[in-house]
Length: 177
Image (cartoon, rainbow, N blue to C red; front, side, top):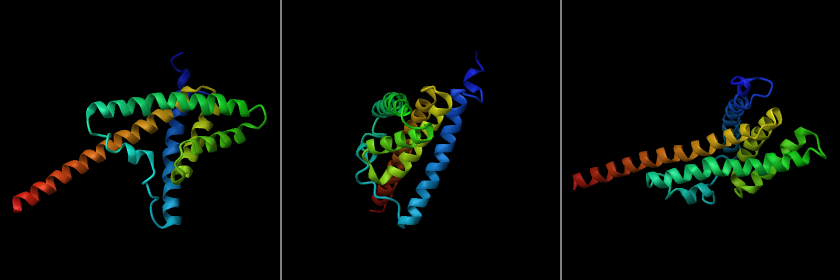
């Protein structure tokens, strides 16, 4: 049935959209709260994205590979492990809300970025909630894929804007000489 993915009861595509919207809003609020409480944005020196910056936007091929790996392969693998295996296994011993929180915490810890733990935890809760609602891994995989791809594409855009501004500034300096 074509309407099945959009049903309110357990339509995976509808809940993926709801989960993605909720994750974006929640992560923005958590990021703002962290900045307010810390007085400054968290340091990103140890973040894996900082290590990827030289590759992001350096070529169309490298960006396509990054989107493919982080936007397709990583969501499939991570959601299979954290929601499909861990969360389901935990339901044998704990109620579903506890399983969502535990799997979200393990998901956040597994990314090895302590500064980003709160945001990753919130994303993990959104992923777990959508899986609990739909019992279909396509929902959290879709959210995760859009999230990761969006980050890579946003960074690619920002890198290209920075490159254009940098080249424009150098051109202006050279003209003034």
